[in-house]
Amino acid sequence: MSFLEVKNLTYTYSKNTPFFNDAVEDVSFSVEKGEILAIVGHTGSGKSTLVQHLNGLIKPTKGEILFCGQNIWNNEKNISSIRSKIGLVFQYPEYQLFEETVFKDIAFGPKNLGFSEQEINESVLNSAKLVGISQEYFNKSPFDLSGGEKRRVAIAGVLAMKPQVIIFDEPTAGLDPIGRNNILNIIKNYKKEHNATVIMVTHSMEDVALLADKVLVMNNGKKAMFGTPKEIFSDRNKLLSVGLDVPLITNVLLKLNELGFNFESNIITVDEAVNAIINCKGGADNA
Amino acid sequence: MLNDFTLGQYFPTNSLIHRLDPRIKLLLTLGFLILIFCATNIYALTLIIFFVVCLIFLTKIPLKMYVKNLKFILPILIFTTVINLFYTNNGNIILEFWKIKITDYAVVRSIFLSLRIVLLIIISSALTYTTSPNSITTGLESLFSPFKYIGLGRAVHTMTMMMTIALRFIPTLVEETQKIMNAQKARGVNFENGSLIQRIKAIIPILIPLLISSVKSAYDLAEAMESRCYNGGENKTNLKVLKIQKSDYLAVLFFIICCLIVFLFNIVF
Image (cartoon, rainbow over all chains, first blue to last red; front, side, top):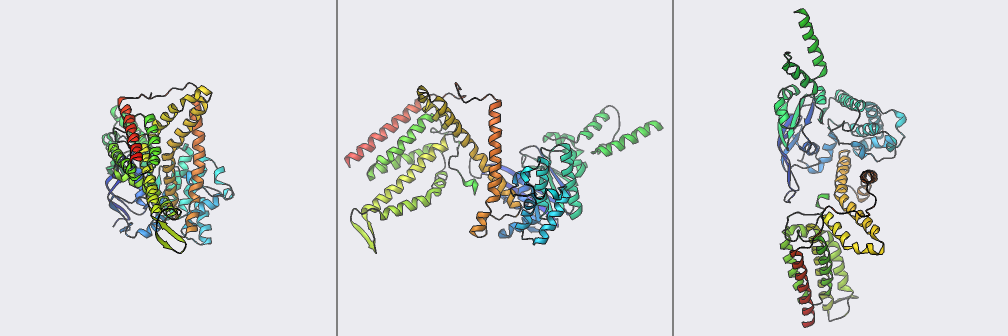
């Protein structure tokens, strides 16, 4: 039994109108506890629609979503309890901020879930620390913060609910490199602290190579590929055919191979590449 | 919930009605709305109902879409019908209890009124279903263009630009609302259950982000327009130039015939 499993999920937008559109078509995959799953695909490939199914925001037209073996729509009245176990951080989550102070905004989720006063305090402190928002911010208005800070506060608001599965929809969109690294570290740290499952929608193949245990490639609402990053990135032609590419560093090594070098094709991060190049150079010196 | 919101939504089926000039459609809609209230007896009204049924078929838009719009005004419809039952004292009393009297004339009047409201909604939905918001505003601008001879050209343009923008942003706002709602649902807000006060309170987390993002997009839009040299529309031309065609004349002719028959029925019966 998988921790979270999606079976033959299909979703049709605006059914029975001229605007109808299969946003997601017959997608199946599963993810285990403590794993990071990356979902990639070009714009409009159905990624965002897919992830909104996972915590019951959208009801599938066909197919089912099993969380710990239970169909999440079995008990429709209980769907909000699923949302507390499977957290979803939307694209540009800073637009969901509304409270007067940062503290209140982070505490909003836990409060809705009926945490006690003490639990709320504790989880707000924890998640604020995790995202690097210090306590002096707590009494500020969230609207006075910078873009990156707003996003971290918004993420803290979801983390404070202590979900077992957390979904990020393009968490690094529109951030500068430092902001991006911050967010990626937050994801890693939350996963480590809570042994949580992370599902991340992203456009950055570098992030996929660095973080993901599994990759789901979407194309036109259908599952195009599913596997480990190394498996996925070893088939560059297929990735190109769905409008994606391998990480930049893999491309560099492929080009070097064309020039007569002989690097392995499963190198996907800069660190791996550095090692491979050093070894190669060492080999050349010895020769 | 928000997906059901269709009032003012363009429904492209490329029918004969879709291809009519928006100016003609606007004028004819207005004409038909007036005509509905000119039809004073049941024969004239039946005739109009027949025309409207023809119209529904001509637009090639599923009947379901019209019914959906009618559902929105059902409470108002019932309310006005019932109120009218009690507020007419002429005619023969057919039902009497306590202080309330219902006369046969009142029943007829209520039926007339509700039929008229239904027809009003169907005709105006037909207009918005078959005409894209942009053509409606281009049509309006063109219809109001004589005002420029009395120095109101700028005002007319500003008004139509405001309308275009407002219409343009309805779907965006609906989408935005849906997004924010989902984001807050993911944070444990429950919009479906709970007491009335709890549900009203649940609106605040939607309203505030929505307001903020609307103000922000208003600024963005203004800047985008200015950086493309928008300066208030003096001598601005339209991308699509409206042209009256044969089918438009036919539509006008059809309407005039309708009018004549309705007035004829009014006099004869």
